[in-house]
View 1: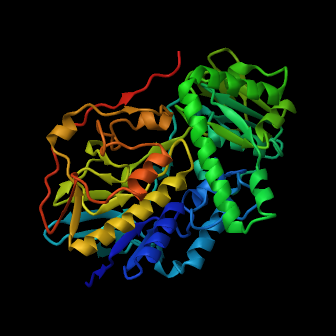
View 2 (view 1 turned 90 degrees about the vertical axis):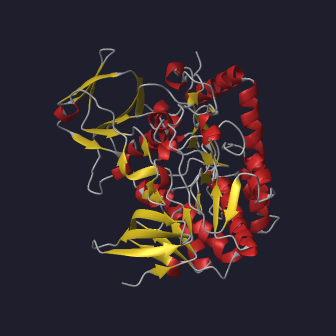
View 3 (view 1 turned 60 degrees about the horizontal axis):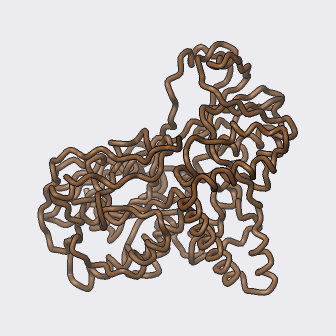
Length: 504
């Protein structure tokens, strides 16, 4: 059986994968590549999630690519417009012929002797093939597309109504005139609530603990104004930089005076809902910046609360029963439909089984290198975005760096590049983790961690990453550029991550 070989294999045809492919084709046009996508369509997250109201939780002038203006009038935009944007990018750069849909990677095995990855891939009808490449761009995201997080609640299976997880929204569901309980407090919950309230009889958002929620205009007035006087691309770049800079300044203010920032966010909610607002539902027990802030376009969530169409309940679940949920505070929530917007299951490297010179890679024993490679794993770059800013800001920088890295290898004749971490690197206590979102805490010990110091740390700072990835040199004392050279993965146990404490 012949094995196809490509210079680069890109994993995933979502926002990251299509962006990475465009950079690769533009910067290194002689490189052959293929994009492997598990699903039958492009779009990634925006194709997977199909629940009512699904939209971006970041401004699209920063979540869009640096090279392609976002022209849709809404800056906080629905999923359909985002998918169209991704499809346009693929068409404009002639990427569609490079995409192979319904190709799931089962395993990827690195041979230092050959300086090659060999991928075992399952196609749509169960047939398996092998592909080879010197280099992998992993754009598979950071969570499992096959399962969502679901806590173990007493009596969960006693409930006789309809149970729905938003990650797997059923097409046949009719919620008109129904009593709905949404369990959750994050971006999915505050997106679903106003959308469902249009048809449902009553929507209750049940949260164990509150989240910061702020209103943002769905359209960017600054961008709309600029487009009257400037070409679309220039208006886009100006709006993009304005959003980046104001976001960074806001993050600095939050870090400098978190108590004041917290009170400001709560006061904004009071102004939206009015004197009847019970601020306990919008007062988290952590500081701003420790989790993502939920942005609701044009205050839609606050409007349905004012109108009495959505009720927020902050309490703990005692148990489920046949007709709904019994709370520890004594209240019973009757429901025809219960939606468990309870979060994601984090997953490294798309859930693919990776081996290096016959040694299985355990993601929990890896250390991140500059937020784009892993300790002692050769010829692999992973693409992830920011937790505290738009995803694609980081993807653009990583894609640019990846192309510079490949060009450097071509120029020097190197066949493999490996971030070398010895036992001393592994033995140092890891850097404190700034984010305490539930899906991050649940994955502690299972996902790659940060090291103690640069370059084994991941900065959540766009300006730092621009300096390091966009303008910094490719070569450093950590990256080992070489010909075929065997690799021994350090056998040390990983140190436990250190988490910053929530607010008292």
